[in-house]
Length: 263
Image (cartoon, rainbow, N blue to C red):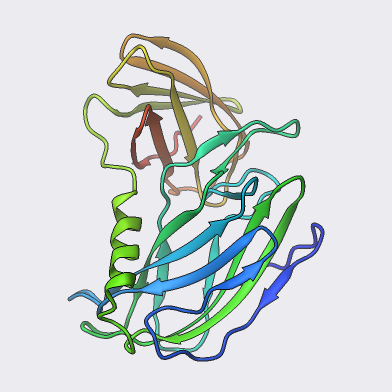
């Protein structure tokens, strides 16, 4: 269940069923929110879509790990026509904060979404609640409810372009010269070693582990193509939960999972 937050106030939005492969655009303080799908589900029942967040100037939103007080994008399905979904995340940026740096986006962003349908070549009714956080001088939780028929406009080229562009912005697969190569846990300190293509450009590392609480890593040393980071572990994730990483250098990014280290 998506939790209800009481930071300052929440904007709650509702939609009636629509005859299109995307929801209406809903406005809230700081921006707009929209859900989009494209085409039919593939042979494995996966239907590609996107969560669009258009931000007003000066507003920000969160990455998959928002720190101790932020709100990551969440989608909760209603009804019974979908089996589940997965939200994917473009590379974020680091925002300094006196209460602790956090990862997010200071520009309009579109998150790729994979909806899991019961059968291939389908586009069912989408009924979903969206929860996310938007920040300016304060951070507010925003909740929106969407209902639309994904089959009604499955061939809409505008929606197809939106979804394709969202997936194209995802971090690439790691490669030998651009990856998180080692993770070691010493007490509550997580030591992370990365290989980066250039020793002249400062890299950034973003990490998350479901059920865990991790402080954003700091770059400790960069020696040629090797960068060393350190992060505090406030709460370790449950056993067998992987450590997700997004490694950024210049305009390039890679992302993936490695085993969360044991002490």
